[in-house]
Amino acid sequence: MKKLTLLQTLIHIGSLFSLAKLFFDYFTNNFSPNPIQDLEQQTGFAAITLLILSLATTPLRTLFNWKAPSKHRRALGLYAFLYATLHVTIYLAIDYAFDLNLLIEATLEKRYTLIGTIGYLLLIPLAITSYKWGMKKVGKNWKKLHRLVYLIAPMLILHFAWARKGDIFSLQGNVLQPFIYALLVILFLVLRIPAIRKKIISLRK
Image 1 (cartoon, rainbow, N blue to C red):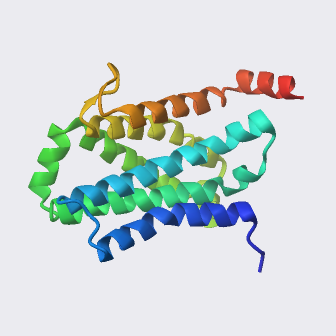
Image 2 (image 1 turned 180 degrees about the horizontal axis):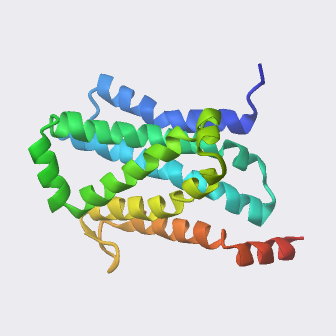
């Protein structure tokens, strides 16, 4: 059995912290008067944070030649999917009690719900094919499939921003966190452009 490295340990502890906090808040009655909203916000925030961290692994390698985080990109992505699934489950089961009519109405009427739903559905095949048997099933198309994350991340940033009261494009309202996350995603995607990545690596060397 392989020993966990310090980075692996920190990733697992950090990724599970939000889940531990949920249990702590539940058993200590530390939620606000709207506990369902607390659950949705905490799980959603954890999901998008971990997804962005998974996107950061390649830029870290490009900028600093730090290769270790790239080895744990899958773990970060799967933790992100875990929290996204909890987020969706709370929304479906607790918030709407699996009422199909209300769910369809909410999805069609609220733009953040619609784009969040699409983003989550696109995450599912990526999570399924993150394991070796899934990679074998997809074969050569695995890399193409997992490039969907470059579309999913901006979609979930919009979901995050639109769920807040305000407008991220005019920087009005409670949009500071979504705005910062949007800048990070743009930066990480730009650093993945082959020409830019090659230029940075040549400058670093």
